[in-house]
Image (cartoon, rainbow, N blue to C red):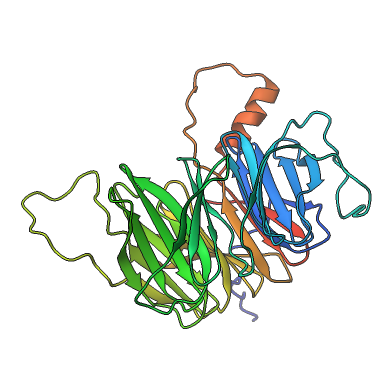
Length: 371
């Protein structure tokens, strides 16, 4: 008598992207959600920028922003900021109505209308380091000789020149971020040497080094700051090596411990993790501070827990290296009892979706819904 064989154990199907945006003919260098997750900006190695509507999954504006690679695209004060390998940082005011939408993958030669250029700054880009900015309308761009220049937007005034660590050979800056801690400006830099350094500007008009550590054996490629540095001060770095490191931000917090004697600032990372995956080109922390993501040379997008640093998911779709990753903002739903039209319901769903976008060498951008 033949016995009935047991069915194979159920397996979870691998996650699949919600949508693939096919518009670029060159590798993607930067992706960025803005406008309450209704828009996604993407930029490539040939200088093209595309603004996408996540409602229609179609381009709303296409233009060649730079002669050469775009290192970073971001939004600021209702405008789009781009930083290119042509040593320029541009601030654009984009009015989508009337903008060209012919994609670079369809035609890279034909002229497109450019948005209104609000500001143009001369910056350095020899080290492939994109700018860092903050809500105080200040941008940072790497300068020669391991220094960092701090400039004001939109007039481009150079407020500080050559911010650098005097006691350590760091090489050139490779990743930058900046934010305000109270009235103090804090600059976080990742360097060619593998060092992560935190500088704090004080009232004496000087920059003080408050943290230095070298967790990486290869150049730092990307860093991301805690979305709430005032209450949960940390940042995370990734590198050409396989290490991801979580560092403290030694700055005054909103709830300092009482009756605590003065102690020297910490100079050790919170945690160093060997992922065994070399070349984590881009790293970003989600706005709720629960998870972070990396884009890797091995074509994988990986999701990690901020608290435990453990890998939670691997998003596999691209066949070539991934160079950029971004999260959509986590937005409060609200308005539960309101009767909405079909269009408004669709817009609400897009805004509240937990998006992650990854850009790769093949010029494609994958959109995923996670956690």
